[in-house]
Image (tube, rainbow, N blue to C red; front, side, top):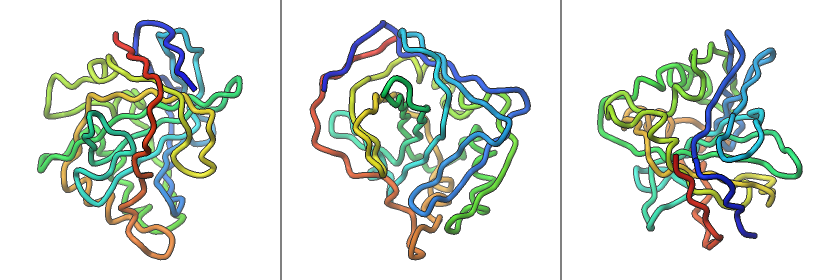
Amino acid sequence: MHAPCGGASGVAEFQQTKDASWIIHNTGRLVIIFPAHGTTMWTTFKDGRPNLTVRYMALKWGSNAMMGSEHSFGGDRFAGEFQIFHHEVAGEIQALSFMIRERLHPDNGRWNSIFAKIPAVSKLWKSSLFKAPTNGITHLIGDTVRSGYTPNFILGLGVKYRGSLTSPPCSQNVVWTIYPRTFQLSSRQMQQLRGIRMEGGLAMSGSMRPTQQYNPQLCLLRS
């Protein structure tokens, strides 16, 4: 199926209720983050799509810096992806994905609140409640070292296409918006993720689905 091209901007804005809390959870297959009871998160699009409520966020990574993303650009893959899934509306699920590049050091301080909870979910089915960053998802999209890689810069360029969920039930009614401008996590932070355990006690280092051979019509979104 071909992607509708819609408006001219790839920018999305993220909002949440005041004093928001999130829950991070090890499902046995991947690590997800979702709003706690009493917290609502939503995304405002600038390309004509309606405002949507966030259902959950997911982290995907692999065993090394070049094998962790489910999407690739020009054949290049990345250390991981940060994905945002919304509640289904009118038969469609809107999904956003941000590429994660691994660097040697230092840590990306924007992710400190998440990595402070990684030990609590390192084992199967574990969950942990924590206070969300004041500006929510926007806080996570950016870099504390590369000054130009602000949330607005990263969100300013996106590629939209129709595809499927990358984990069960692999529904085919997903509209993906992929943001190729990366943010970075340190090798130490990535190693923390690679130490998380999944079903059977195995390391959750292959939480991503292998890149699929698929050639949809792409729609470039630029702010």
